[in-house]
Image 1 (spheres, rainbow, N blue to C red):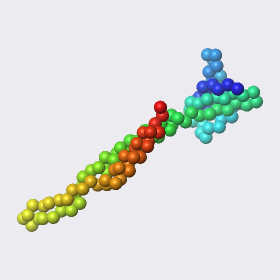
Image 2 (image 1 turned 120 degrees about the vertical axis):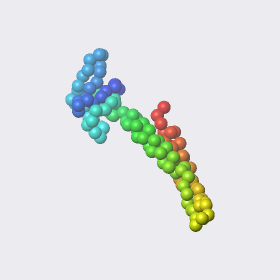
Image 3 (image 1 turned 135 degrees about the vertical axis):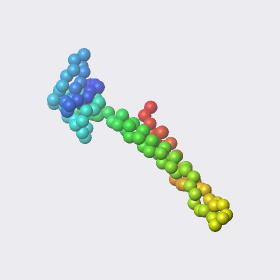
Image 4 (image 1 turned 60 degrees about the vertical axis):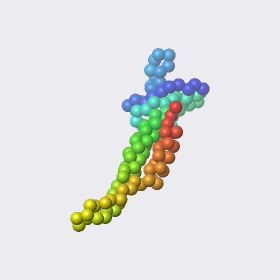
Length: 120
């Protein structure tokens, strides 16, 4: 059995062997999609299968989720006026609080969990 780097381009499997690009048609694609991808060809005596390398897809999703968490942390950290007193000639006095202090700490925890998932 051999494990080779392979790819799908325009719905066709391609594998480089000894400097030559081959396009075998008798390979079982165990991936869910037919879009261009990079992965591995596991060649056996009876059959060969193509496995997509999904690590890059996972990394892109993790990076986007981290960006969303950072934006949410920024929003949750904003100070907002929650009450105003005074007026009618007296200066208005407002009470300022952090918008969502509990959510901020939870979001920071989620962001850290996502950072820990990043591929190394």
